[in-house]
Image 1 (cartoon, rainbow, N blue to C red):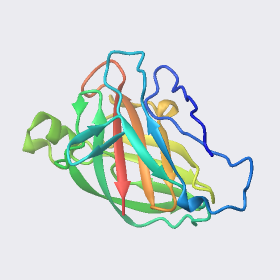
Image 2 (cartoon, rainbow, N blue to C red):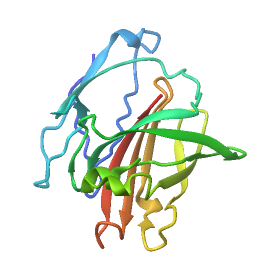
Image 3 (cartoon, rainbow, N blue to C red):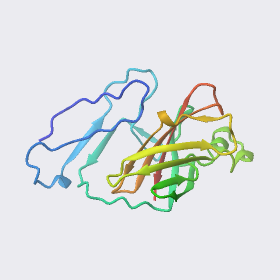
Amino acid sequence: MLSTKQVIIPKGKQVGELIIQALEDTEENFESRSVTIRIIEVSAPEELVIGYENGTVYSSLLVNFRDNDCPVLLSERYRGEVVQSTFGTVGDGNHVFPARLEEISNGVYRFNNIWGDYVAYLTENPEFSGGFPVTMDFRIDEQGNVTIIDAQMVGFEDVEILVDEMEAIYDPCEDRFLIHMVQVGLFSDDPYDIYTEFTP
């Protein structure tokens, strides 16, 4: 039986990882178990959310257990969607874009654009469509742990992508990425956050 536990996401972070480990009865089938994750307190006045669906914001999430034996099998094409940013809640299904993934060298992969036409979407200016692409290079191990190597806005040297502050989480069972991008210089001189989900 699982008890109630508290997890603290550090200041300045909006992406956290929760690891649940069975200490007893490890032979049981945990695929039939579930856990509820709920935000109970936020220290900052900004809204903190953990999920979107059809434009609805959720502060709790029911997660079903499954084994962790899924192999890492990356797709070549993904459906990307910006789900949250410093400039407001998105996740309304209106900014969905195709993304391509390729292996550019031995064990190094590149997303061709990790936020699609977000500039055109945010400014409501179709003339920006197709511009401002942000590529991301990364490695991924057999367990699905992602190490971001580089990210840059193609053709815009004045825009800085803060790679050291970026995060990427990969679920091998769903072939799903959640990428947290931090950049400076396009919309603001202060760092701002973009969260994008990729599914096959």
